[in-house]
Length: 153
Image 1: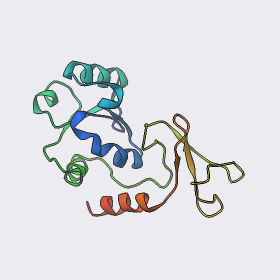
Image 2 (image 1 turned 135 degrees about the vertical axis):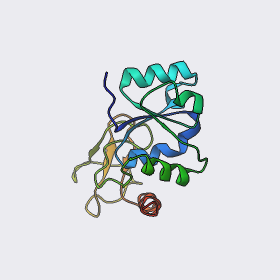
Image 3 (image 1 turned 90 degrees about the vertical axis):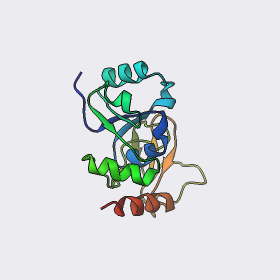
Image 4 (image 1 turned 90 degrees about the horizontal axis):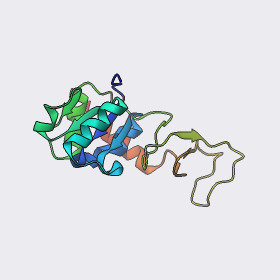
């Protein structure tokens, strides 16, 4: 299977990146969400799913291609490394992937019934994950992620 650059597998050391990458519309699987810890499991999964492996493990990075090898420990520094590696890191106007589970999200129609904690649909667009049912909107977290990503450039 060929590897698509927008399909990523994050190793166990990089869980802090998953919501950022998903908000940039990268199909991003986090190893621990799939109970993948051993190098052989990560490589097999990445290969089967056609994913680019993102890792801080230098030995693992030499065993699979394509891989993006990161050195930094802090999330913002890791994001800068990903940008330097050629990933486009700007928050999507329309989200495609759930920040919680990586499921696909879809727009919520204005006449849909929503939980009480969700903002009024007439004031802003809403999305819902088709896998876990999580709702999303452009609130304070969205703006915080946008500001972090804008500081990378």
